[in-house]
Length: 254
Image (cartoon, rainbow, N blue to C red; front, side, top):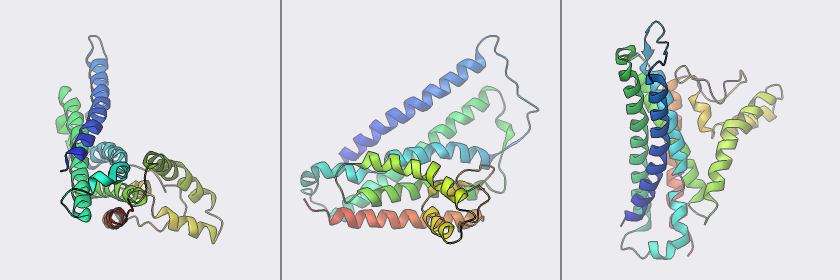
């Protein structure tokens, strides 16, 4: 009954795994080629939270790539809704499968990163720190938030899902950060931009560990600096977006 979504996820993983695998092989070849010189530095420690933030960004990208799964069903929704199952239950199962896929999309680059360190005998430099649990939950929250927002924006319409994904990246990575900086000295207008920036998943990544993206511009923001508060907000937006997607998909007219 969910075979079509499993096929889509398999195709997405083939592309995702191909890109990561190519980068992994390129890294291994260039660093282990006979005569290659690799500077291992002083072999200090690398906080686990930093590694999780970096590989977690791969999962965030993957989450946006599959964030229009309900929208993709709308072209043949007449056939989909003939299945002997409630529409909302079917939507919930699609979302559950996608979330499981996002977890796998996080584990794959994490495993490859560990293999790279292991190839140099440096796995011991990766040390758990006091932030790694909160950063892990926040990173998944950002991926789920973006996924939920995309589902909520696209589930009730046919087509144009890819355009929405592209626009969301442009808005999150370029438009909103620039507006935050440009309106910092414009009372009133800046408050409006701050409210809009609450829906910017990348803004919550700032200060999550040692990574600065999104609202790290020095401008006032409504997004708290506390990692746990950010995590709670991202998961909340993800749940709201997913619920909106389920309701919108259920009410879609054939």
